[in-house]
Length: 387
Image (cartoon, rainbow, N blue to C red; front, top):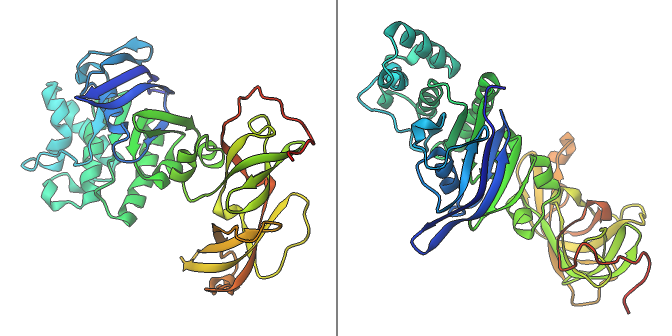
Protein backbone atom coordinates (compact mmCIF):
# COMPACT_ATOMS: atom_id res chain seq x y z
CA UNK A 1 0.00 0.00 0.00
CA UNK A 2 1.23 3.53 -0.82
CA UNK A 3 -1.28 5.32 1.41
CA UNK A 4 -0.70 6.47 4.96
CA UNK A 5 -2.04 5.60 8.38
CA UNK A 6 -3.94 8.49 9.96
CA UNK A 7 -4.68 8.77 13.67
CA UNK A 8 -6.46 11.46 15.66
CA UNK A 9 -6.33 11.48 19.44
CA UNK A 10 -8.54 13.31 21.95
CA UNK A 11 -9.49 16.06 19.48
CA UNK A 12 -11.56 18.97 20.70
CA UNK A 13 -12.65 21.90 18.57
CA UNK A 14 -15.04 24.73 19.40
CA UNK A 15 -16.39 27.66 17.43
CA UNK A 16 -17.39 30.17 20.06
CA UNK A 17 -19.74 28.39 22.45
CA UNK A 18 -20.41 25.55 19.98
CA UNK A 19 -18.32 22.43 20.59
CA UNK A 20 -17.92 20.78 17.18
CA UNK A 21 -15.59 17.96 18.26
CA UNK A 22 -15.73 16.36 21.71
CA UNK A 23 -12.76 14.16 22.57
CA UNK A 24 -12.62 12.41 19.17
CA UNK A 25 -10.13 9.57 18.74
CA UNK A 26 -9.90 7.12 15.84
CA UNK A 27 -7.42 5.48 13.51
CA UNK A 28 -7.51 5.05 9.72
CA UNK A 29 -5.45 2.23 8.24
CA UNK A 30 -3.06 2.54 5.32
CA UNK A 31 -4.89 2.22 1.99
CA UNK A 32 -8.37 2.14 3.54
CA UNK A 33 -11.54 3.65 2.13
CA UNK A 34 -12.74 5.11 5.42
CA UNK A 35 -16.00 7.04 5.74
CA UNK A 36 -17.11 9.62 8.30
CA UNK A 37 -20.89 9.27 8.40
CA UNK A 38 -23.44 11.33 10.28
CA UNK A 39 -26.17 13.96 10.06
CA UNK A 40 -25.52 17.62 9.23
CA UNK A 41 -23.75 19.41 12.06
CA UNK A 42 -22.35 16.24 13.66
CA UNK A 43 -18.70 17.34 13.27
CA UNK A 44 -17.57 15.15 10.38
CA UNK A 45 -16.48 18.03 8.08
CA UNK A 46 -14.75 19.76 11.00
CA UNK A 47 -12.84 16.54 11.68
CA UNK A 48 -11.83 16.31 8.02
CA UNK A 49 -10.65 19.92 8.02
CA UNK A 50 -8.57 19.31 11.15
CA UNK A 51 -6.93 16.30 9.47
CA UNK A 52 -6.31 18.40 6.35
CA UNK A 53 -4.81 21.28 8.34
CA UNK A 54 -7.48 23.86 7.45
CA UNK A 55 -8.50 24.02 11.13
CA UNK A 56 -6.34 23.75 14.24
CA UNK A 57 -7.77 21.72 17.13
CA UNK A 58 -8.18 23.30 20.56
CA UNK A 59 -6.82 20.08 22.07
CA UNK A 60 -5.55 16.74 20.79
CA UNK A 61 -3.27 15.61 18.00
CA UNK A 62 -3.18 14.38 14.39
CA UNK A 63 -0.53 11.95 13.19
CA UNK A 64 0.15 10.63 9.69
CA UNK A 65 2.32 7.51 9.52
CA UNK A 66 3.18 8.12 13.15
CA UNK A 67 4.45 11.65 12.47
CA UNK A 68 2.84 14.49 14.41
CA UNK A 69 1.35 16.99 11.93
CA UNK A 70 -0.82 19.06 14.30
CA UNK A 71 -0.09 22.70 13.57
CA UNK A 72 1.51 22.05 10.17
CA UNK A 73 0.05 23.80 7.12
CA UNK A 74 -1.98 21.69 4.63
CA UNK A 75 0.85 21.58 2.07
CA UNK A 76 3.15 19.90 4.61
CA UNK A 77 0.85 16.90 5.26
CA UNK A 78 0.78 14.95 1.97
CA UNK A 79 -3.01 15.26 2.05
CA UNK A 80 -5.17 16.66 -0.73
CA UNK A 81 -8.85 17.56 -0.47
CA UNK A 82 -11.75 17.23 -2.92
CA UNK A 83 -14.45 19.75 -2.05
CA UNK A 84 -18.20 19.60 -2.48
CA UNK A 85 -18.26 22.59 -4.87
CA UNK A 86 -15.40 21.33 -7.13
CA UNK A 87 -13.37 24.61 -6.74
CA UNK A 88 -12.31 24.58 -10.41
CA UNK A 89 -10.87 27.63 -12.16
CA UNK A 90 -13.56 28.65 -14.70
CA UNK A 91 -11.11 30.42 -17.04
CA UNK A 92 -8.76 27.44 -17.33
CA UNK A 93 -9.20 24.34 -19.47
CA UNK A 94 -9.60 20.89 -17.96
CA UNK A 95 -5.93 20.24 -18.79
CA UNK A 96 -4.73 23.40 -17.03
CA UNK A 97 -7.00 22.83 -14.01
CA UNK A 98 -5.41 19.43 -13.48
CA UNK A 99 -1.93 20.78 -14.22
CA UNK A 100 -2.28 23.71 -11.81
CA UNK A 101 -0.68 22.04 -8.74
CA UNK A 102 2.30 21.04 -10.89
CA UNK A 103 2.67 24.61 -12.23
CA UNK A 104 2.80 25.88 -8.64
CA UNK A 105 5.61 23.43 -7.92
CA UNK A 106 7.40 24.45 -11.15
CA UNK A 107 7.44 20.88 -12.50
CA UNK A 108 9.09 20.76 -15.99
CA UNK A 109 6.62 20.92 -18.88
CA UNK A 110 7.66 17.51 -20.27
CA UNK A 111 6.69 15.88 -16.96
CA UNK A 112 3.51 17.95 -16.64
CA UNK A 113 2.23 16.70 -19.99
CA UNK A 114 2.75 13.03 -19.10
CA UNK A 115 1.30 13.34 -15.57
CA UNK A 116 -1.80 15.24 -16.71
CA UNK A 117 -2.41 12.74 -19.49
CA UNK A 118 -2.21 9.82 -17.06
CA UNK A 119 -4.51 11.40 -14.52
CA UNK A 120 -7.10 12.43 -17.10
CA UNK A 121 -7.07 8.84 -18.35
CA UNK A 122 -7.57 7.66 -14.76
CA UNK A 123 -10.81 9.66 -14.52
CA UNK A 124 -11.81 8.95 -18.14
CA UNK A 125 -11.59 12.57 -19.31
CA UNK A 126 -8.79 12.35 -21.87
CA UNK A 127 -11.13 13.48 -24.67
CA UNK A 128 -12.20 16.59 -22.71
CA UNK A 129 -8.79 18.09 -21.96
CA UNK A 130 -9.42 21.31 -23.93
CA UNK A 131 -12.88 22.06 -22.55
CA UNK A 132 -13.66 24.69 -19.93
CA UNK A 133 -15.52 23.68 -16.73
CA UNK A 134 -18.69 25.38 -18.01
CA UNK A 135 -18.81 22.82 -20.84
CA UNK A 136 -18.79 19.85 -18.48
CA UNK A 137 -21.51 17.98 -16.59
CA UNK A 138 -21.51 17.88 -12.80
CA UNK A 139 -20.01 14.40 -12.78
CA UNK A 140 -17.25 15.42 -15.18
CA UNK A 141 -16.40 18.47 -13.06
CA UNK A 142 -16.06 16.24 -10.02
CA UNK A 143 -13.72 13.92 -11.92
CA UNK A 144 -11.56 16.92 -12.85
CA UNK A 145 -11.39 17.87 -9.17
CA UNK A 146 -10.39 14.31 -8.25
CA UNK A 147 -7.67 14.21 -10.94
CA UNK A 148 -6.29 17.54 -9.73
CA UNK A 149 -6.24 16.30 -6.13
CA UNK A 150 -4.45 13.09 -7.11
CA UNK A 151 -1.81 14.59 -9.39
CA UNK A 152 0.34 15.69 -6.45
CA UNK A 153 0.48 12.02 -5.46
CA UNK A 154 -0.81 12.47 -1.89
CA UNK A 155 -0.77 9.57 0.54
CA UNK A 156 -4.22 10.57 1.83
CA UNK A 157 -7.17 11.88 -0.19
CA UNK A 158 -9.84 13.72 1.80
CA UNK A 159 -13.28 13.94 0.21
CA UNK A 160 -15.85 16.34 1.69
CA UNK A 161 -19.28 15.19 0.45
CA UNK A 162 -17.98 15.28 -3.14
CA UNK A 163 -21.15 13.84 -4.72
CA UNK A 164 -23.87 15.75 -2.87
CA UNK A 165 -24.46 18.23 -5.71
CA UNK A 166 -25.20 15.44 -8.22
CA UNK A 167 -28.57 13.84 -8.96
CA UNK A 168 -29.25 10.41 -7.47
CA UNK A 169 -28.49 8.27 -10.53
CA UNK A 170 -25.27 10.14 -11.38
CA UNK A 171 -24.24 9.98 -7.73
CA UNK A 172 -24.49 6.18 -7.76
CA UNK A 173 -22.45 5.99 -10.97
CA UNK A 174 -19.78 8.36 -9.65
CA UNK A 175 -19.57 6.43 -6.39
CA UNK A 176 -18.63 3.27 -8.27
CA UNK A 177 -16.07 5.20 -10.30
CA UNK A 178 -14.61 6.65 -7.12
CA UNK A 179 -14.28 3.17 -5.64
CA UNK A 180 -12.52 1.97 -8.80
CA UNK A 181 -10.11 4.92 -8.66
CA UNK A 182 -9.34 4.06 -5.03
CA UNK A 183 -8.56 0.48 -6.05
CA UNK A 184 -6.24 1.68 -8.82
CA UNK A 185 -4.24 4.29 -6.89
CA UNK A 186 -4.14 2.42 -3.56
CA UNK A 187 -3.92 5.48 -1.31
CA UNK A 188 -5.93 6.19 1.83
CA UNK A 189 -9.36 7.75 1.21
CA UNK A 190 -11.24 9.54 4.01
CA UNK A 191 -14.75 10.24 2.78
CA UNK A 192 -17.31 12.50 4.46
CA UNK A 193 -20.98 11.82 3.77
CA UNK A 194 -24.42 12.00 5.37
CA UNK A 195 -25.71 9.32 2.98
CA UNK A 196 -25.79 5.90 4.65
CA UNK A 197 -26.11 4.04 1.33
CA UNK A 198 -22.95 5.67 0.00
CA UNK A 199 -20.96 4.77 3.09
CA UNK A 200 -22.22 1.18 3.24
CA UNK A 201 -21.53 0.48 -0.44
CA UNK A 202 -17.88 1.57 -0.75
CA UNK A 203 -16.28 1.77 2.70
CA UNK A 204 -13.83 -0.64 4.25
CA UNK A 205 -14.81 0.86 7.61
CA UNK A 206 -17.19 3.56 8.80
CA UNK A 207 -17.14 5.94 11.77
CA UNK A 208 -20.68 7.00 12.72
CA UNK A 209 -20.72 10.46 14.32
CA UNK A 210 -23.30 12.54 16.15
CA UNK A 211 -23.07 15.75 18.17
CA UNK A 212 -19.29 15.94 17.88
CA UNK A 213 -18.60 12.38 19.01
CA UNK A 214 -17.69 9.10 17.31
CA UNK A 215 -20.36 6.59 18.36
CA UNK A 216 -19.16 3.48 16.56
CA UNK A 217 -16.40 2.40 14.18
CA UNK A 218 -16.61 -0.82 12.19
CA UNK A 219 -17.09 -2.50 8.83
CA UNK A 220 -20.34 -1.79 6.97
CA UNK A 221 -21.63 -5.22 8.04
CA UNK A 222 -20.74 -4.62 11.70
CA UNK A 223 -22.36 -1.19 11.70
CA UNK A 224 -25.54 -2.45 10.04
CA UNK A 225 -25.97 -5.83 11.74
CA UNK A 226 -24.66 -4.92 15.22
CA UNK A 227 -25.35 -1.26 15.98
CA UNK A 228 -24.09 -0.23 19.42
CA UNK A 229 -26.72 2.43 20.15
CA UNK A 230 -30.26 3.46 19.28
CA UNK A 231 -28.90 6.38 17.24
CA UNK A 232 -26.72 4.14 15.06
CA UNK A 233 -29.55 1.62 14.60
CA UNK A 234 -31.93 4.37 13.47
CA UNK A 235 -29.44 6.28 11.34
CA UNK A 236 -28.17 3.26 9.39
CA UNK A 237 -31.20 2.02 7.49
CA UNK A 238 -34.73 1.35 8.69
CA UNK A 239 -35.18 -0.57 11.91
CA UNK A 240 -37.78 -1.72 14.42
CA UNK A 241 -37.04 -0.88 18.06
CA UNK A 242 -38.47 -2.64 21.12
CA UNK A 243 -37.86 -1.36 24.66
CA UNK A 244 -38.67 -3.21 27.84
CA UNK A 245 -37.48 -5.06 30.91
CA UNK A 246 -35.93 -8.53 30.91
CA UNK A 247 -38.37 -10.81 32.77
CA UNK A 248 -36.86 -14.22 32.02
CA UNK A 249 -33.53 -15.71 30.94
CA UNK A 250 -33.46 -18.88 28.85
CA UNK A 251 -29.80 -19.62 28.26
CA UNK A 252 -28.58 -17.30 25.45
CA UNK A 253 -32.12 -15.96 24.99
CA UNK A 254 -34.11 -13.49 27.05
CA UNK A 255 -37.78 -12.72 27.29
CA UNK A 256 -38.58 -9.03 27.58
CA UNK A 257 -41.85 -7.29 28.38
CA UNK A 258 -41.75 -4.87 25.45
CA UNK A 259 -43.59 -1.57 25.80
CA UNK A 260 -46.51 -1.48 23.38
CA UNK A 261 -45.94 -5.06 22.20
CA UNK A 262 -45.97 -7.47 25.13
CA UNK A 263 -43.67 -10.50 25.59
CA UNK A 264 -40.79 -10.87 23.09
CA UNK A 265 -38.00 -13.42 22.89
CA UNK A 266 -34.60 -12.00 21.92
CA UNK A 267 -30.99 -13.16 21.78
CA UNK A 268 -29.08 -11.56 24.65
CA UNK A 269 -26.09 -12.49 26.74
CA UNK A 270 -24.28 -10.43 29.40
CA UNK A 271 -25.83 -7.15 28.28
CA UNK A 272 -29.32 -8.28 29.29
CA UNK A 273 -29.37 -9.80 32.78
CA UNK A 274 -32.63 -10.38 34.61
CA UNK A 275 -34.35 -7.09 35.44
CA UNK A 276 -32.33 -4.97 33.03
CA UNK A 277 -34.08 -2.41 30.83
CA UNK A 278 -32.99 -2.94 27.22
CA UNK A 279 -33.68 -1.63 23.73
CA UNK A 280 -33.62 -4.18 20.94
CA UNK A 281 -33.36 -3.58 17.18
CA UNK A 282 -34.70 -5.83 14.40
CA UNK A 283 -34.14 -4.91 10.76
CA UNK A 284 -37.28 -4.89 8.54
CA UNK A 285 -35.89 -7.52 6.16
CA UNK A 286 -35.56 -9.96 9.08
CA UNK A 287 -39.35 -10.05 9.52
CA UNK A 288 -41.56 -12.40 7.54
CA UNK A 289 -45.05 -11.38 6.47
CA UNK A 290 -47.92 -13.54 5.27
CA UNK A 291 -51.60 -14.23 5.62
CA UNK A 292 -51.13 -17.65 7.21
CA UNK A 293 -49.32 -18.47 10.44
CA UNK A 294 -45.85 -19.98 9.81
CA UNK A 295 -44.72 -23.36 11.17
CA UNK A 296 -44.16 -23.47 14.91
CA UNK A 297 -40.69 -22.38 16.04
CA UNK A 298 -39.65 -22.16 19.69
CA UNK A 299 -37.41 -19.16 18.95
CA UNK A 300 -39.87 -17.20 16.80
CA UNK A 301 -41.90 -14.12 17.78
CA UNK A 302 -45.36 -13.88 16.23
CA UNK A 303 -47.51 -10.80 15.64
CA UNK A 304 -50.97 -10.42 14.20
CA UNK A 305 -51.82 -7.09 12.66
CA UNK A 306 -53.32 -4.98 9.91
CA UNK A 307 -51.44 -3.39 7.01
CA UNK A 308 -51.61 0.38 7.45
CA UNK A 309 -49.47 1.29 4.44
CA UNK A 310 -47.92 -0.77 1.61
CA UNK A 311 -45.17 1.05 -0.34
CA UNK A 312 -44.30 -0.68 -3.63
CA UNK A 313 -40.75 -0.04 -4.92
CA UNK A 314 -40.41 -2.53 -7.76
CA UNK A 315 -37.79 -4.83 -6.25
CA UNK A 316 -39.53 -4.87 -2.86
CA UNK A 317 -42.60 -3.73 -0.95
CA UNK A 318 -42.34 -1.94 2.37
CA UNK A 319 -45.22 -2.64 4.74
CA UNK A 320 -46.14 -0.64 7.83
CA UNK A 321 -48.18 -2.95 10.05
CA UNK A 322 -50.09 -2.14 13.22
CA UNK A 323 -50.02 -5.28 15.34
CA UNK A 324 -49.80 -7.07 18.66
CA UNK A 325 -47.42 -9.81 19.76
CA UNK A 326 -48.87 -13.26 20.49
CA UNK A 327 -49.84 -13.31 24.16
CA UNK A 328 -49.84 -9.50 24.50
CA UNK A 329 -52.64 -7.97 26.62
CA UNK A 330 -55.45 -6.08 24.91
CA UNK A 331 -54.58 -2.44 24.36
CA UNK A 332 -50.90 -3.11 23.60
CA UNK A 333 -50.48 -2.23 19.93
CA UNK A 334 -47.24 -1.34 18.14
CA UNK A 335 -46.24 -0.36 14.60
CA UNK A 336 -43.69 -2.43 12.65
CA UNK A 337 -41.91 -1.99 9.32
CA UNK A 338 -41.40 -5.05 7.09
CA UNK A 339 -39.53 -5.40 3.78
CA UNK A 340 -40.68 -8.10 1.40
CA UNK A 341 -38.30 -8.79 -1.47
CA UNK A 342 -39.77 -9.66 -4.88
CA UNK A 343 -37.49 -12.59 -5.63
CA UNK A 344 -39.94 -14.18 -8.08
CA UNK A 345 -42.00 -12.77 -10.93
CA UNK A 346 -45.28 -13.51 -9.15
CA UNK A 347 -44.20 -11.38 -6.20
CA UNK A 348 -43.95 -8.32 -8.44
CA UNK A 349 -47.71 -7.92 -7.92
CA UNK A 350 -48.00 -8.09 -4.11
CA UNK A 351 -50.84 -10.24 -2.79
CA UNK A 352 -50.87 -8.35 0.52
CA UNK A 353 -52.65 -5.03 0.33
CA UNK A 354 -53.88 -2.11 2.41
CA UNK A 355 -55.98 -3.13 5.43
CA UNK A 356 -55.25 -6.84 4.96
CA UNK A 357 -54.90 -8.88 8.16
CA UNK A 358 -51.42 -10.42 8.30
CA UNK A 359 -49.11 -12.51 10.48
CA UNK A 360 -45.56 -11.29 11.12
CA UNK A 361 -42.70 -13.31 12.58
CA UNK A 362 -39.03 -12.98 13.33
CA UNK A 363 -36.42 -15.15 15.02
CA UNK A 364 -35.07 -14.17 18.43
CA UNK A 365 -31.61 -14.62 16.87
CA UNK A 366 -32.26 -11.64 14.57
CA UNK A 367 -32.83 -9.23 17.46
CA UNK A 368 -29.82 -7.19 18.62
CA UNK A 369 -29.59 -5.47 22.01
CA UNK A 370 -28.47 -1.90 21.21
CA UNK A 371 -28.83 -0.33 24.66
CA UNK A 372 -28.99 -1.69 28.20
CA UNK A 373 -28.93 -0.12 31.66
CA UNK A 374 -27.07 -3.17 32.98
CA UNK A 375 -23.36 -3.30 33.74
CA UNK A 376 -21.49 -5.96 31.67
CA UNK A 377 -20.48 -7.68 34.92
CA UNK A 378 -24.05 -8.12 36.16
CA UNK A 379 -24.98 -11.79 36.68
CA UNK A 380 -27.33 -13.37 34.16
CA UNK A 381 -29.32 -16.27 35.70
CA UNK A 382 -30.20 -18.89 33.12
CA UNK A 383 -33.84 -19.74 33.81
CA UNK A 384 -35.08 -17.57 36.69
CA UNK A 385 -38.14 -15.39 36.01
CA UNK A 386 -39.26 -12.04 37.37
CA UNK A 387 -42.62 -12.23 39.20
